[in-house]
Amino acid sequence: MCLSGAIWSVSCSMWDTSVPTGDLSWSVHPGRIHHRLEEVVSTGRRSQLPWASCENTWNTANCVALQILDSPSTNLTNQTTLSKTTSAATEFWERRVLAMSRGIEELGSVRWDLALCLLACWVFCYFSTWKGVRSSGKVAYFTATFPYVMLLILLIRGLTLPGAWEGIYYYLYPDLNRLANLEVWIEAGSQVCFSYSLTAGTLNVLGSYNEYNNNCYKDCFWLCLLNSGTSFVAGFVVFSVLGFMAQKQGVTVDNVVESGPGLAFIAYPQATAMMPLPQFWTVCFFLMLIFLSVDTHFVTVESYITSISDLFPKLFRKPGRHEMHVLFICSSFFLIHLMLVTEGGIYIFQLIDYYGTTRAFHYVMALSECLALAWGFGADRVINVIEDMTGQRPCVFFKLCWKYIIPLLSLISLILYLVDYTHLKINDWYSYPDWAYALGWTMTLSYILMVPLWAAGKMFLTAGTFRHRLSILCRPAEDPSWRRREMGEEGTTVELTTSAVTIYP
Image 1 (spheres, one colour):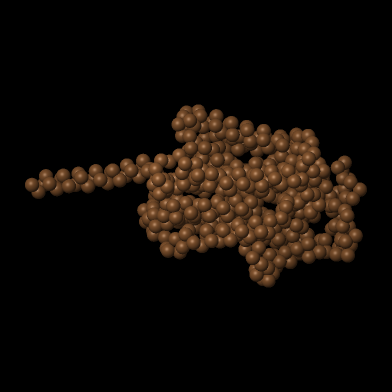
Image 2 (cartoon, rainbow, N blue to C red; image 1 turned 135 degrees about the vertical axis):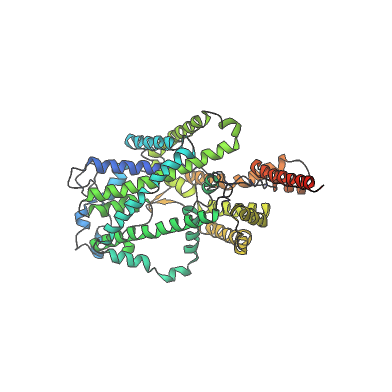
């Protein structure tokens, strides 16, 4: 729950959970999307997209052209004979765009075309955030609304494709027996945390720019409606195209493509190559992905920079300091990200993506935030603050969620995640070396242990008995604006009393 205006700063013996965690992988997706779009534009005069044929320098003898996969005679039996082959789209992605090495042990050289795209993304990010929310807010008006235009265009096109309704039927009528699988609900809970940025701190930081009396009820309602509504509509876009591909390839929808990055960079571009005017539909798709990615990118960076500035206000809130701070952050992360655009960078990317912001991170942070707010700060205090902000008192159901339901579900989900944990594999054939798995768990623990270590440090540095320390650390920090408002109300009462005494001696 993000308290609008962030009037109360909970310093409960836990670290301020509004500081977003830095995920090194965020800006790499825009760079690769940018590169893919450049490939489309550069080949716009050609009648065939480069990932639709096997007549390119990067293709191998095992390449299967799109025309073969598109053949109506390609059924399930024929698919088994092609099990050792790779599609032209897959080879374009792995051999042309990524130039994948044989493993994380072989980083290889930097892909300078990807590096230039990465640089363009960071330059855009800098000029979107260098003036704070004044600049990023204006940029978001376009980057947040333009994808809806592209989504509408792709939706109309997807619904008119042959076989689209088979994909939509698969989308709207799922296998109800899967609902009895507890893993499905755990994955859904993790996806909600990721999609709504509930535990990443982004909402907390951006919410701190609101006025005190901002209606957070309305903001939460629109956030949930737009987020879930967009995901629901996007499902029609994706599954209508998957239904089209399934009909073309003579397979069922669930056998078209596996989930993951391949859906965006392999399956959907392959589908657009099957359509009339493939260059136009591919450009629409990647433009939508670019603006979705860069929007998330600079908002995350803005939240990170704001959190650092709030921790050290005297250092960064001086004229010119903010711009230099943003330049340092963007430049540093660009240099760090160069290792992700090497020939072995995809292995590092997958490692960060799998271990950086895992379900364990979401569940631990959700548990920590509920303990800090509902038990440290007090659920009744939270309700009183929200009522003072909005004039509406939340129902008791929210209190039950904060104190019992969410912590219990988070703890159960965390235990089940640890029990069912499996090592990361790439394409079901590449296993990482042991040191890479150790590095991955180090990233996971760096997020999880930050809260208890900060809490222990606060308890150690605070004087007094254990109960006295806990009482001090669980006390909300005084806010000057809140204090001024209280003093103003007291001053008004004194003036009225004095006037009454004067009038009626």
